[in-house]
Image 1 (cartoon, rainbow, N blue to C red):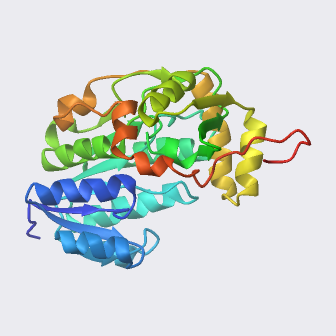
Image 2 (image 1 turned 135 degrees about the vertical axis):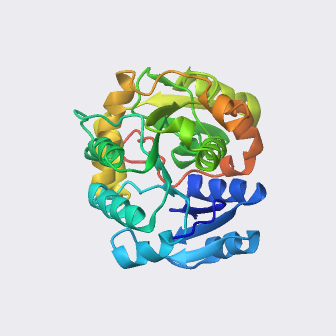
Amino acid sequence: MIHDEGLFLITGATGKTGRHATKRLLESGHRVRAMVHRPDERSAALADAGAEIVVADFRDLDGMATALRGVSGAYFCYPILPGLVEATAGFAQVATEAGVRSVVNMSQISARRDAGSDAARQHWLSERLLDRTGLITTHLRPTFFAEWLKVWWENREGEGYLRLPFGEGRHAPIAVADQARVIAAVLTDPEPHDRAIYPLHGPVEHDHHEIAEAMADVLGFPVHYDPISIKEFTSAMRERGLPEHLVQHLGNVAVDYRDGVFAGTNDIVERIGGHAPLTVRQFVDADRSSFDTSGPYHVPAPDTDGGPK
């Protein structure tokens, strides 16, 4: 089968890292096939930017075969949902049949054999499965995304609140745009990264008190970090209707975070992606409007009667 060395498949193309990786590859003159679950305004925007859109599902081998036909390299990104190992097995089989050369796998920093999170353990298994294929394989393990600050942010009466179960743990938030630089760079030159596992970090490690302080400096109003229990956090996520698989994951990675699993920083983004990653201040300053309102999953503070404010 003849492959176009400039044709790359991006799965999860309307998601955070997938959308940015698609744009970076297109801007570099590569052809991109963007895999989406359904056509919508997000996929239309990618098409307008020059991507070829394919509608497919990880559980559909024939659909995946169509998506991977003629592709040189693929970005594999599965959401935090049940079925990751099965999806990885199907992807690996179909990619091998199609003669795909390389894969960049989005894993997570908490992936390990003895992880308490079901999702994290499945990521570890999926890494090992891909390592057993003939594909040139690279695993990315990001710490918490900077974008997660927007998800759990509360704007209340002119002040900001981060009510999270992370204790005094630390990490260096990593923006999706910076992860996309690494994804695009590895896809276009995969050989030096074969079987590599790359933890992805932002440039500065903080605890959440320091993150709140950095946000306040940019936004110009007080921002508070209010450490809460893991039980309060997971109960709030269940009340908001998040899937149990995700809630179980979040509760266990909160333990990992407190234990230092998410801590650290390195030069991988700059060394491979070619650009220094965004600091918290730069990230917030570039997207100020997102902090005008509360994020969809913020945990509201209880009032004096024990109910949410």
